[in-house]
Length: 415
Image (cartoon, rainbow, N blue to C red; front, side, top):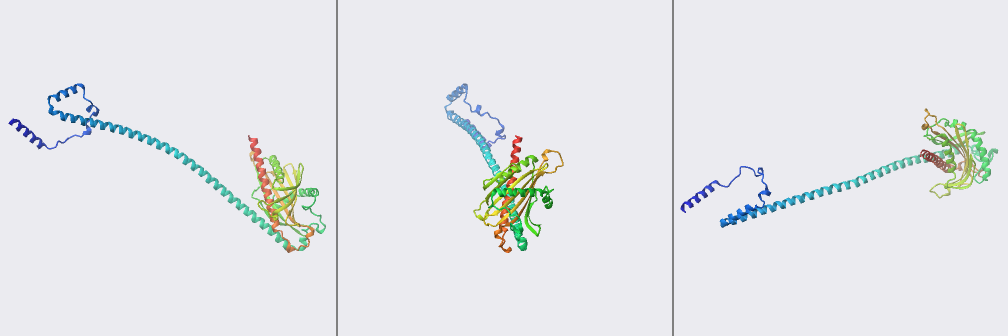
């Protein structure tokens, strides 16, 4: 017993001298099969373990603790595996959900962005068109005011002898037609005047320089004078040039139809009308749109006739424009519209186009009953502007209607 005690003391002293046990290799480098290591013991191992435990009851407590630790480690590893699988599953779901929601959110945002871009572009185009139209209307208004003032100033500078010619029936001249005259009589009388006006169409266009003009920028008013037997006469001349990129025969029909239809539209109060194959006549009242004052209303009688030649169509008209605000003041109107082919350099039909050249002469008149009015009392500015304003609307409407009609015909023929 003494010898065994000494051996145990020596062994303990030797272990204490060694100190804590250190490893000179890394645990990661050792591949351990955890499942096999901590697996349940086999039947033989279990029998051997049981026999060992029976041989020495003193070693049973450490064996039980060692198995519990093994079971705890196995349980922790199983839990960690399940947790990893659960987290990976959740991660995949979140990634898929984010990708789906991101795509779905991006699509509406992209669609909305395109819509706003289209709206902004359209609004910008409309604004630019409105600004351009406002500039055009301002220029037209300025021109109308300028020509009205120029005519009035010119008339004021004329002598009484010159003003006398403005009155109908003066110097033994033939009495002119007014709005209150019988429509049939006016119709016959103005048809005769149209024949005379048609005979001088080439002379008129040579004088104002429109004969060989194919420039759409030509449009405006000019106050001019012309010589009569005794003195010069003041009048307003309006010129306009429009290009229609269509065949001559189609354009000819469209322009004549649009012109006749324009004077039968609903915004005119038709009092009398007559229509033939190549001519028509209308007596109507027209109010300036958006205004209710009688000062903005005209009583108009207009007769038009169409002349078809081998290489052109000529429309000639005569009209009287009376102010509803004055029983004595009116405007005597003579107009010419020439439609002909635009010269082309090639034989391609797609290059075919026609030019529509217009010229109008407006002469202010006063009735015989108003001959007591002095020169400085004659006021033509507002009335002249009103007549010119209505005429501007008519020209624009006829040109637009002809273009629309020709476009519709082309679409139908293409289909």
